[in-house]
Length: 311
Image (cartoon, rainbow, N blue to C red; front, side):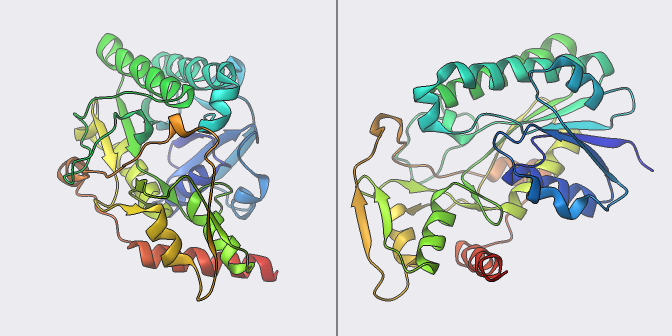
């Protein structure tokens, strides 16, 4: 059996798909999650897979990280994080402890074992942009929430380990990802409300745009970038290169006659008005391109949610 790939946050939405992609590519996986954001049912189908090992643990616990990452680890994909923008404004310390201190623990374990690291960042670190060319990796950063600030801090610490210790680190910044097993996010919320015959509710005026990346495309990007020698020391975006307004997204998802309502935004200061990815660097470095159109991804998600509700 090949050396295992360590995955933090394996029971989360993206973590579940990364585990699936690793197994499909023939890797063995050792993983952990504390189920603060992840769900046990997300990884149930993997438990009979001999190449999959899981234990419950918290990235703030150094002993758990040392158990996960050792001399036999082929690589680590670090996905575990506090991820809620609105909650970060209410509870910033929680985000600091998990996203910064937890990442430090992962980096120290990787340094001790010379384990390559794929670090999940976020497109939310970027400053606002109105350009139709999209945001590339050289675009200025300006985190608008403690969530984005702590994720950027984690990236900076990871980059310091690359420059200071020559640790093989790749920083991954996928744009807004959606798909099956996602509990929060505008696309699954809209689709589920539509399936239930409920009105679709939009926070604010709905003119904000997002570049929406399907889950399997994101997972393939994460795995390929983590193992790419050309990507070591790099920051890489992943997206479709097309954005859609939340108003347009609601109209695309809503069935005939379904109401669309606008409601007050709880934290408008944290809302980024336009997110459009320039994925050209990932294409150049990894030969990676998304396979799913927005329409195809929404249909896949709609089918999955329908099947789940009928079980």
